[in-house]
Amino acid sequence: DSFQIDTLRRTVGTVQSDAGNSATQFKSSQTETTTDHWKDCLLQFVTGSLAFQTKKITGYNGSTKIFTFTSGFTGTPSNGDVYEIIAI
Image (cartoon, rainbow, N blue to C red; front, side, top):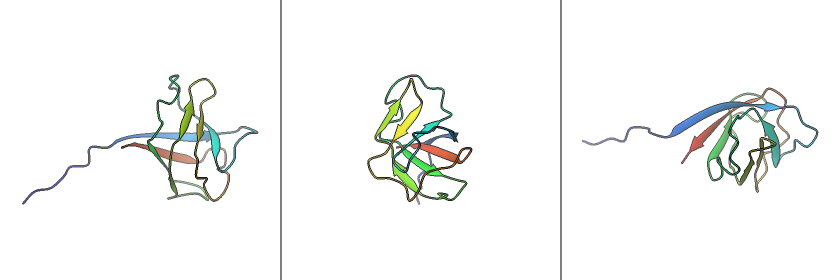
């Protein structure tokens, strides 16, 4: 018998209040300053009205801390919503 151990790196954060937040972008609590550091990772909400929705990150601005997504969520995340980033 063989099995695979889950070795995916996971990072947790929260949505921050920003006038530009939308279904396709939002300001995050991440402290990473490298632009596109999180690009191509998955982001899944674990709280709020978007809980369990998962999208691929298409961009991250290290200066503004804003994530972008080509395919939007079903709504705008709320301030304080918790998400998990999954490095794939």
